[in-house]
Length: 349
Length: 283
Image (cartoon, rainbow over all chains, first blue to last red; front, side, top):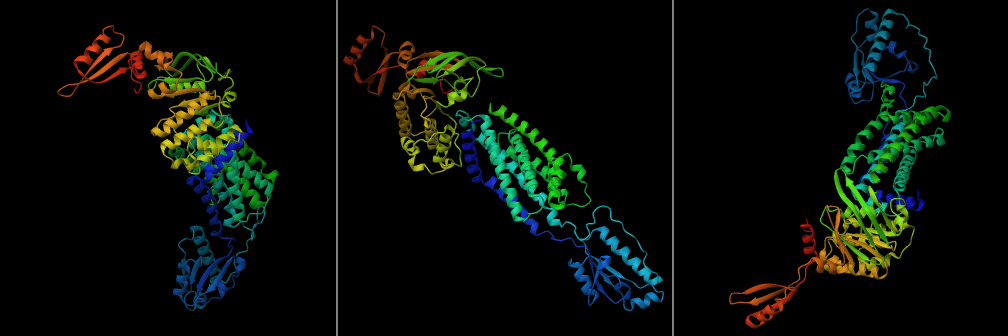
């Protein structure tokens, strides 16, 4: 290895990459995507807000401790409109003299409105709750007492907001986008024939590979830090978080080296990089989707990175908690490094 | 000897590109390496510059086996490629500075740019330059480390006559400074004008290696072409110089005909090549 050559190539690649609109676009879009953070809800809503028209002593006895808040409206039309506009989970319209009708043994008709975006489980829960409450009122019996036991740490009031859950996604996206940078640098070097010119100077194939790796890791870390600053994610064990980001950057760069070695033209590189890029982002997306099992993602290297970053940022995990995930990412780093270097050395030789 | 090649051989699968060729080049000499496309010129150059490892034979550059220690050789050679291979997003100056950095040197880039008449374009990106200007940048790049040997592959290709002549002047200057030059070209006039010796390569083999004069004398046709006016226009007669009857016939023509021009018809390297191989160089 020749340090002066590594330095020269890394400097050249840094300048060339910044003047490449595609690379620059990848770099900036990775950061800009983190802007989605500010669109996502900053807190977890633990109360069902219901719009209500009509008077009833039965419903007024349920306070927010049951997780339902009733908001009175002046007309059935206002209730319907409020729910339709998505301001309330559901709307309840009671007929005139609801309580007396109920007490006289009649079956007053209640209308429930649901926002179309509410999932089925929310609609079913509210419906059941209303039926139980009305039945209890009609029969003059109290609601059954149930003792709920929380298994594990009680997160009531401390649930992780969606915006905080989404940070591993931005980090993973930004890191894997650098696969694009590194493979573009490699493919361009071959396609333009400049590699031949470089290899008849004191620079060796190892110098070329190492310098591109340094540039790729540098860009990855730069983007990751930008995202951390942009989302103000200064929590958790930051040194451990940076170790995870570094391992992720190495993963992205080594995979970029390998994928960049598979083709000699830019269009080909888009195909070779594009598909794995989407796959690698998946674990970051799945973590945001309730009900989707992350275990099916365990074959994707970035799963372990997402999992570790999530634990560090959102569950206060330290190195002793995430070392296994880091070890798996590290193993993938080593595998892709050898695959990439072997393929590139073969091509450059 | 500055360049020594012994039974160099290289095949691409079944195709024998270079077939046991041997030659040497002395210090300060320009060797013109001529041959049609696919004759083995580029493969030979690649083996001499360490881009390919010979499958048989060996090459020593500056006394160093290129296969065993290519990086030591690369520090002392300059290579100008035929295909354009500059960094398109870097300026002319940045391209040259990058290669200077690879060699760990700090040459006077302004002086180098002036030598190849690129000062005006120093801060233009390579991608905006014409083919001819890019060729000049690549030529300048091959000089950046003040190399002992220059490997030049079609250095004047795509250049206008004035620029091409300027490059040829630099090649002659480098030779005068004692630099050895391995010149691969299709341009017969260029090879004839610049080379101390030329090697003809055809189907992977060197078919002739000598000075241009010797090759033309040995293998060329020596003739005299006489052009005469007639009532309807012109007529020509070609007289072999080595024929004993030629002086008498020339006198006769001068007496009896209205001779417009008389030229000696020296064989060209192209004709010598065709005579040796039955192929044209452009093929």
